Length: 68
Image (tube, rainbow, N blue to C red; front, side, top):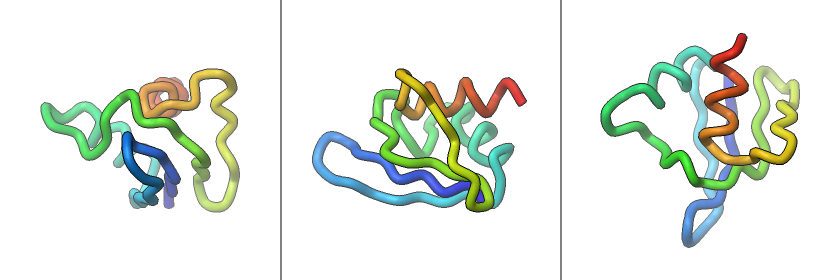
């Protein structure tokens, strides 16, 4: 399970995906669930935190998970 806590332009929200692959596939859609520029506050896969470094955005998370 991938859990993402993010901040859009107005508030903090949480979204979950059954897997990292499901998130990557969704971001490839013409209209994905999340905008690339949303700031990621915290992301984890099965309880393991994902370190995004300086690119703590949805796009940064997508790039990180696409490499695996």
